[in-house]
Length: 414
Image (cartoon, rainbow, N blue to C red):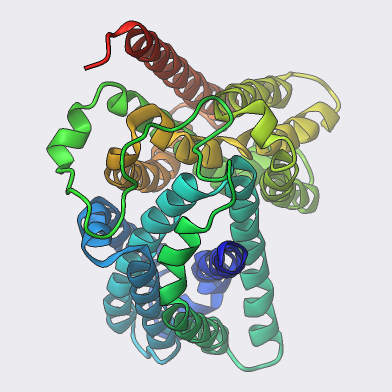
């Protein structure tokens, strides 16, 4: 059961990544067919992000009431319906309507699945699962390219991905009885939350367990620290994805084709880095992965900013930033039950997802304003500030958790 459900979750993560690149890949054609300015892509993505944030915050209550399996199946079903809706949308306002269930489905399943994996599977699986998400996100532009070059139009790409999600929804519904059995049949040593220390003995977050209100979760010592760290990381990643190629072309004078290739290598670095991190994540531990990731990002940013005549260090630096980013997201999620207890993990991961989407939504346009007013040369500085903020917050959290563990060790038994 344990291995069967793990295979289903791997497939689910690929499917989760599939829709994430479709809007960007197809928008150059979509906005023309819909008769709207190119800038209207921001409206669609903001609606999706808003729904994702709302459902992430509500995921703890919903998951405790229905269970992870049901939430995953329903959320993927919502996403599937939205994608099929995108494929038949003939006007921009209809597209915006379908963006609502798209965002609601994406946020709930992201929080629920990440918490389930953090509770029941080893750190290597968290890294590999997010690598599989990157695989899905990398595939969808090729689906869009095929749909456009074959003359079928952008709607065909949404239909293909939407129907794929429909099939996954059916698989998830059939697999619902497996979820609880798999958690109980996990091999010894797998029901842990990281390589640093064992999770607490509290009951896992799941169906029927006690609800943890949002206000209570935010009052837990260290939660604000991890939220800021997660916000900073996701802001860094999304800013690099959007602006890296523009920085290389406008500030470093790199050929646009070369810049585009290395911008894509940033994403490949994240995907490949997570795959590689999975082989040693259990031995190294989440804390060291987070620390090493932010330090590697910092080194890459320095290389990116070096005022040298050759562009080679800057290009290598961008790839290094991607490799550094790779383990941070999975490790922050996977360490949540260790840092805050299993009972509170679903609520806190839901808030973390909201912080992540907020950072991803706000940071790229914020840097756009900074670069317009000050200059594109601030790109490495912007990334450096975010990396330093993320590292500082994560290190403060480590010290707080360490002190709490020492107090628990010396406390007399009740």
